[in-house]
Amino acid sequence: MTFDKDKASIAAVLGAVREGHRRKDAAAIGAQFATEAVLFDLAPPLAHGFDVPGMAAWLDKWEGPVEIEERDLKVVVSGDLAVCYGLQKVAAITGEGESAEWWQRLTVCLARTDGEWKIVHEHTSVPFHMDGSFRAAVDLEP
Image (cartoon, rainbow, N blue to C red; front, side):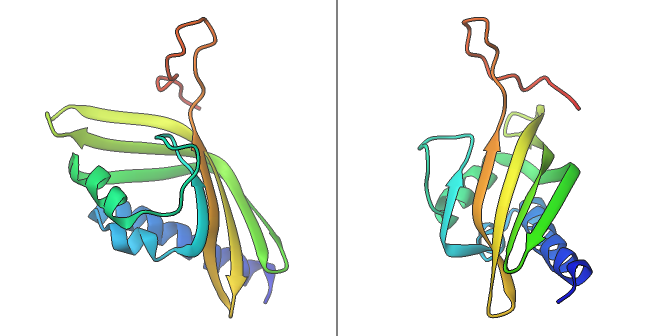
């Protein structure tokens, strides 16, 4: 495969994750992850596999769609492995009707098995204020 085809296939995986969030379809999001995937997400625990019921419960807390936008996403492909990294904006409406949005850092590692790209690792994080308050710095924008 050429780099352009790989990049298009990887973009399709990330697009399916975005669309799954927008439709609040945890199973569609989970379908993009390898069975053995390890996630380092914002919420505890420190590491876990993809949890469809847990994702569904999180999605259900929001009114309407959860919108995802990537910015400055870089894609590096080497053989059957790929790494994507950049910034990601998450925006949704809380159950109380309030707007919530934040930018987070995103790293996604994918592996190609039998010609199909799947996410094997995802790491999302937000910086925190180093002033002793340990507050998440969700007010930052690129």
